[in-house]
Image 1 (cartoon, rainbow, N blue to C red):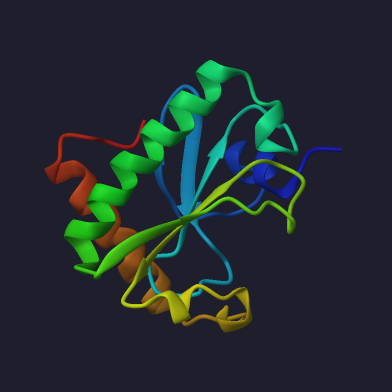
Image 2: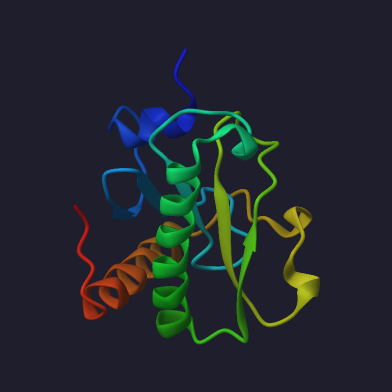
Length: 138
């Protein structure tokens, strides 16, 4: 059975997609730690990142850097953090989170019922920043 991420990528489930290319798709987390919390997911459904082919790893991290730069421009955080944990969904994914301190890097802080207007605003801010950097959603 396809992972929830594959179902989002395939359009079977809704998602606030902010970026996509041939290898990766990025969308907002449904339980954000901070506004703008984004997941970068390879289209290839592989549970553990160490099992990804090298070219896919490079492409996912390249996409993460692109989105991280847009996140930095859109939210002006002290840092854009990247977490590669992968315990929640058996499909490799990188969490990108705009943070002011390391104390904000806890999944215990995730908002399980985020305001849809805040989520829509965050998605639009990221899309606009990506567009300003020459990246359009494909």
